[in-house]
Amino acid sequence: MQIQNKDIRDVFFENYKKDFLEDKKNFILTNDADVFALKSLKNNKRFIDAGVAEQNLINIASGLAHSGKYPLIFGFCTFLTFRCYEQLKFNIGSHYANVKIVGIGPGYSFPYDGPTHHAIQDIALMNLIPEFDIYNVSDNNLANLVSKSLKKFKGPVYIRLEKGKQDYNLGIKYNLKKGFEYTKKIKNAKTLIITTGYTNILANELFEECKKFDVINFFKFKNFDQNKLSKVIKKYKKIIVYDENTYYGGISIFINSIIIKNNIKIKIQYLTSADKQTFLYSQDRNDFMKKIKIDKKNLKKIL
Image 1 (tube, rainbow, N blue to C red):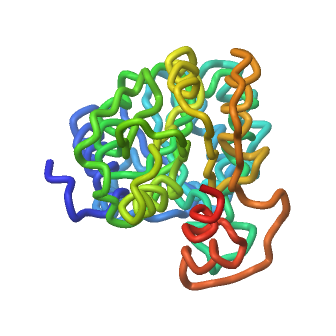
Image 2: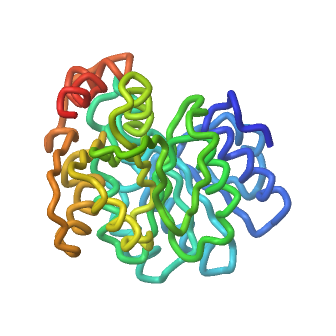
Image 3: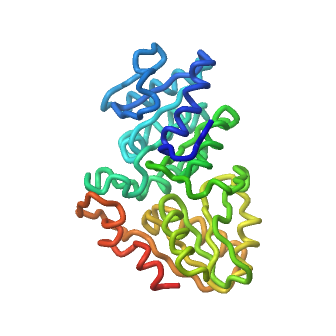
């Protein structure tokens, strides 16, 4: 499938749609959300819109999984995590149910909808459920790979999916078991910027303006190659954790754990969202990030 010049959500769901039509064990569930690639399936008997009833949605998916079906849930990140957390933990997690959850609208994807739609803590929330694997998918290349690998993922998986045409990492050879990959690299760089999601886009853009650092896209947060990431970090004099999520809600906790566990002596700085609910509104995501001082300009200041 051609993945260039397409919305990342269409890349992901068009791949899934093909598998959905070929295997009658597949079920799609949603909480009154909508994606363009799946509109033609809305009248299919295996497409279930539970409405704004996330607890019930998770219970239905759990029952389908226990009957040998392959349920995939999609909806907004915040609503599929916070609203139904007990059901996720016990009805999906504790039973190791084979349910895939795709959260759309990660970070400040919808900066005009306020804190109800700001998905900046859901990674940490899902990390607390031991059985869940977590992926953060922010480019078409990775969306193509992850969506084609869904059947290979065993047990519960939470996938955060960006929006828009994200063609910027097409040449990257991702390894899903490894869990991270360089997206920009120069010879003898002393600084490494570790990013995830939308901040990888911004760090890549800044790299093109001043090629003084390396950039990693950290996209898998459990069962990734911690030993390899530790060895990578040790090569640098300074690392910057650049994350749209809060310090406690995103990748900072994983990077800190690796540094402490391996006794790595390194200078580290963080550029993340403040640990608070932000009642600001904007029609533009970059403008919103500028207002809260985690935009590309503020990243450049701490290089």
